[in-house]
Image (cartoon, rainbow, N blue to C red; front, side, top):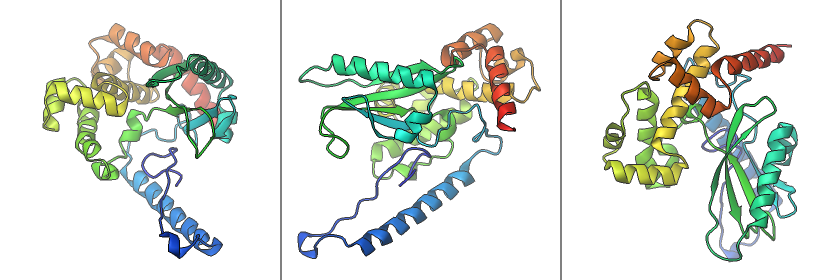
Length: 284
């Protein structure tokens, strides 16, 4: 499947039969592929119907490559997502290769392999966020070690998600409403206590499980919501920076500028110039 939950994140449809039934025939596999295509179309239609009316889902400045993760083997060759990797910004690609080389060189023979949250700038200086995970063995892709680089879903991605999309994981089902609560209340009223109450958990337990499952803290997700809304407003050219800062829940303009640069690698003014150039280039 090309994107069963999030667009750009492939998945798999599993179908099993007992040994006595024999191998799947080519005709059966073709029929299964047609079913998968129908599921993909239904998922795309469902996501499109859930997008906020004011979203910039297809904006050139949004981080939305067609495939949003790549897998490298021990020789630093892509064994999944090769096309997306080849089309990636040169600076991004170089930094992912360097990080993969570092992880391979420091791979302990035994013990847990920690995942990394990796922020890397592209050639424009705009930061992209990946999660890097190493597997010593992954037979479906390689006989040796592989490293997954998966773009973290952004605030806009979560706008199209509902708890039922994770029905195979009860804990995710329970926590997804907290994502929705934060997206609706990021302007300033979403304290940890209020967020945890929205899913009937203690602040401590909620913070710990949210961070483990989603790969970032609730505070960081709130910041992503603020940054996305600030980007959207920056591109409308209808408000001054001070007003955007206030609307997005920042204490003041300097606080907004500092946090925006921390999240994107660029000041709001610099980011807007780059985004405008990308917007103009996409129209030609």
